[in-house]
Image 1 (cartoon, rainbow, N blue to C red):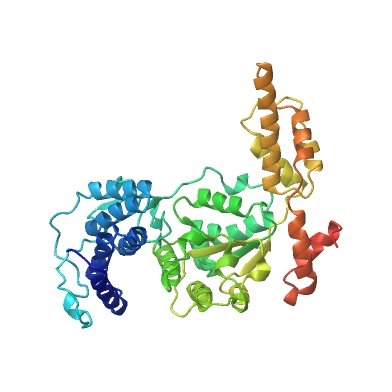
Image 2: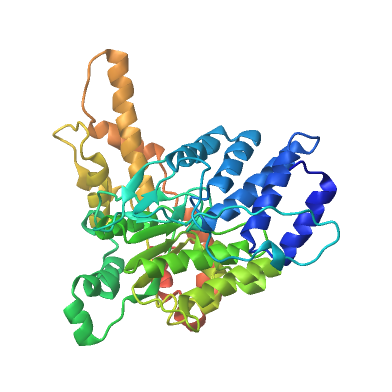
Length: 457
């Protein structure tokens, strides 16, 4: 069907009135694609891709939407994305005869608008082919029998249930590999891991597999590393959610994506959701000038502990470097039940972290890790990793210059400590003001105690 701009405007007006009409959205996507060769070709191609991805968010194997996505992705200069859609389209057999479509709004249900062209019937395909779940690269897994290690996390920002399915990486690290953070690990084992692994005790003490924990502290001190260790403990029952998985430029889409994230977690319970930089998703509503941002915060509050939200088996871990920007309503019981400070590692933890990052590397027998730990007070875990990497680079550089391989020496590590300065100082300077003058209810007492001990006040 050849399309002109006037027809496109009529189609878009109809879509505004009936946004859930699958057939109409596909027509709008194709209309944009028809116009993608004119002066505004790039903008039309972008719109076609956005509409196709919206369809694929709920219908990942809709071959018609996939066809639009392949062409529009190539037109907007994203050939890799287009190739992923093409592989999935080829794996599904491409366009062909379709089964009877599921019940959905029909063309006759569209509002009457002047000039609306005749709309042909288009096939709908089921969300999953029978017994098969498809990946972004066109590979598939038999889902009959044992549950595979998949969660529907959109690789291109469409969130859970999104355009593409991403196989969950299961890290090799465990909680025992995390140096320090003993309070955090103990709380996590008591609140979630222990009850999940001991259902009899959970029943005896009437504890539930739900709740949340907010981790805050200087950047690089182990919040994300802890999340990866949890992933290693839980295998597939883990999902790390970032801003790109939720935030969307279109009004209302961010709230829908956030709901899809929690809805998918409930279906895959027991599950841990890790919300990185939660202050960006749950910022104080008093600091937000636009209603769109406030709506996302309200949606997060509702999903964590709202009327009708059954989060049994869903444990939420939030991480932030700026807890003073998090909306106070997120910190009440039932949402983030515990707020835990993640501080720079103490000396025993620094020994463990240095040992972890040096293992597997050629080391001189005279390496004194305890001496290094004593010289790295206030270093974050990320700082300590950089020390180890810098020492390895010094040894590598010397080996290349001399033509003779040598191990990492104590001198390399000592030199690296001099070059790498602790990065936590700037955070403590900012946090000091909030801890002293915005300590309602004693929320920053543990931070003040730490800063007094280390003579930062």
